[in-house]
Length: 408
Image (cartoon, rainbow, N blue to C red; front, side):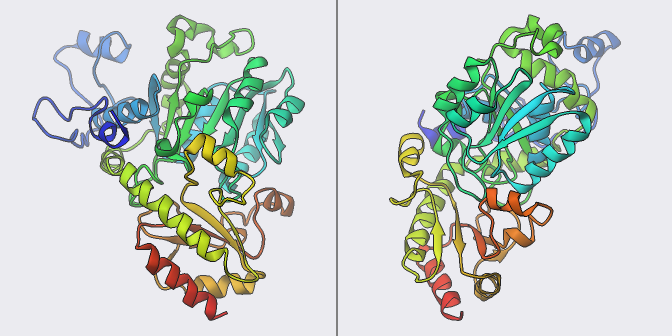
């Protein structure tokens, strides 16, 4: 199946019991069974079924199966938010004394999370760019994961998955990719060697900005050395499903960061138009970036522009499409605010991946808790505007930015 067909039909057939074309919203906390023996079997993972929505739910399960198939994984675990997914993907394999290697240009919330993990004895070693060379230079016997965003938000740097994965694997370390800004429409990171993929499905998968959620997908390809990763000893019997078995039966279910059935349903609806939306969004982003490139005294950053340093990787990994985010440096914070306030169609909001164009001044909002060095590493300056392009007509978007720029 090609992409848009797979969105509708791969690993999904609606609800067989009723004929519903979508799995219904099972808005129930618990599920009853015909006997105590049956509930015991379900509760102890010895029979298929559902017991409690914090652990599993039919609506959520349908969403997980669809995303897993789309990413070519062996299974997925949905979470209450993208940040919950990032947190669980890492804590499933980490303990006190461990180290993470990560890009310094991560989303501000993820950087804040890594700061919080220090209180639990987990250290992050940052590098300006996640490359094979930088990872090789930072790996120690304490390194337990390499974590990076595939397309940095808002730095818009692109990671060469294959080369980084090869270095990480040579040291027995998994590569975890946050592919939120790329989406399965642009790439399946498992094809290039990634081991775990994380999405903030609140963004492009949902597409309408109406449900917070996150999801973790496992490739099943990484072999967990139980000496290096001692927490996997009791799960080694599950073979390639060890990571998912440990996650579901441990920290994820105990912390209680499950996805709500309603949000899973909204995500499943949004998922079905992901291909159509991403095609339009990428096209609009490129056209807007090409226009902004002609504006004097302003600097546009978009990976699919021919003179961008990541253009080669964009062609190799994404088929030439650069995603849906671009940034613009206006010359000063005052000009940035005037431009933002002068736009008629763009919403001033902190999300990305909506059908509407969204703009934000990152330095004063999502990076307000970051140090100056962290802002610089993330490509965030006082004059930076982040633009999450929507599905409006490209001519209208360009005209809107033109009139707002003329005002300043």
